Length: 308
Length: 97
Image (cartoon, rainbow over the protein chains, first blue to last red):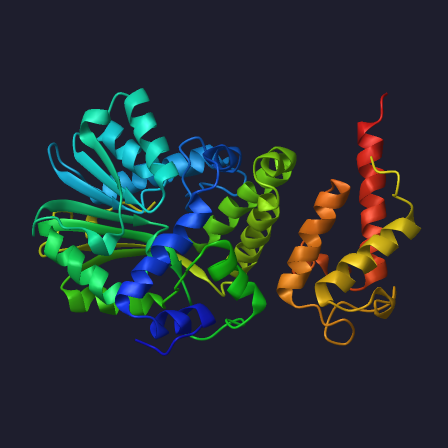
């Protein structure tokens, strides 16, 4: 792996692995522990806190997020009775979509008790609670039996996890042969572009979101391959994140007074970090990718996927 | 609608917010000062923070000062004039017919 690129990353390297897990448990959770009512004013109705996939730049957020859920479902290809883990499941956007649209058993983990409550309440409301489990747990504390999972999803979450080598090794251990792993997250270009030591970077990575570590795509893929995963598909969604963030920012603007009433100062945090992120993706100083890998032989032949 | 939406009052508010951001006395923030390194040297976070604070203060939407779309907004005065025109637009839209 390359040398640390940001102050946040350098500070993480100065901590022990145990200290870093504790750091993430507290600092990352803080953002997501804000009143869920705030996020429901900013995000789509399923509360996806990750990029959508837009058919055209004028499309609405709901349609773009629905397309993304459907795409993740297709890529994970969960068969009846299969067991899926959503690491950093948030308020259950993908988790519950997958529970509703497959016959698999879905298990989410999050660092936020409030997110867990929302996800479970929705699972009951939507009649899928018998196949949904949600725990407040750090990924590195999972104690599942080896080869007990068929699919693992990290949507907008692995960016908060420092110890990538350990996490990928752990996922390989937990996946059954033929198991799928999907990541949808943010990366740095391999060539240095933009100022990664700026106050804006520090603001978004630490003050707003607790802890973020952006690798280059090639570094993540290398770590995955070294752990024993086969990478079978990668797509760039950077432009789609620009559109997603534009809609979130407009929603913050539209609901500023209500957000401020629930959490004074938080509308400013949201709009500021989202504006920095939008500009970073627009200038491609940060990139958004969706990565699909398998443990062993893939069940799906991605060479036969239709474009578009 | 704020009562302090005269150009003079807006100028003062913009100067005050920039001074706070830079932790410098307001007298050092001149109206014709440029935002970039040749003048006040506001970094990207300060510009975004200023953007958001002004939108909140005046209940308007502004272009991002650090983006290419806001190339013309390069001085304290230009920001204040933009705010004044946005307030005028939103007042016109909201007025009874």
